[in-house]
Image 1 (cartoon, rainbow, N blue to C red):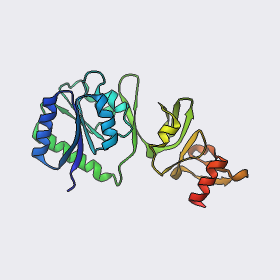
Image 2 (image 1 turned 135 degrees about the vertical axis):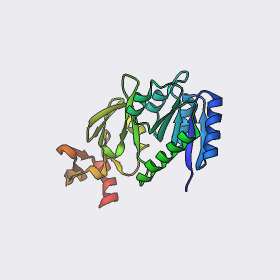
Image 3 (image 1 turned 180 degrees about the vertical axis):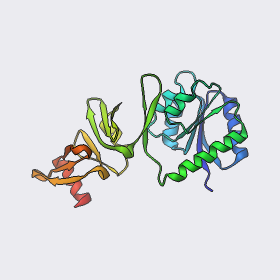
Image 4 (image 1 turned 45 degrees about the vertical axis):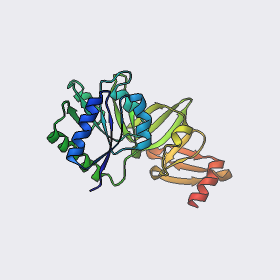
Length: 232
């Protein structure tokens, strides 16, 4: 059984020590990083890409919900907190579990079983974004459901099966985070290749791609040359 890679984020050092001790006692986990602040945790999580994030909610400066909204890579999340009033909001942002401090060994073991069950369902890790809302909560959006990404000044609109959402980011920066299932077709648009329903040839080496809902987007002349190298 492969160990779960875990990161712990909690502003209380003793809480991090106790959780690490419990995880070591239960076994099957590898603590690959920890942080006492959300600010330091963000680059840590994005670089280490753990299977699981144990996350406190009430922390100085940036809280746990705000931390999630700033991540480029979102692992499975288990909130660990001394307060029960955030439970509903935690599950609204699709946290896998919600543990109350002090954490009990038996309860933590059950959580780890749930984590393994969830990971076993994933043939490959899902690429997803956390989209915050104005109330401090938000939702996770799986990029497997996104078929078009379009830039508007310093914002991106992500079109998916349930509608669309906006994020504040440049297209060039966002494109670097995507895998090969996505292709930038021109200066302002990226498509998910598996979502393309029809391909038509246009003049000057361009292509017309039909996406879900019947929308047609154009592969530019320069990107068309890359397209042909990949697919023709």
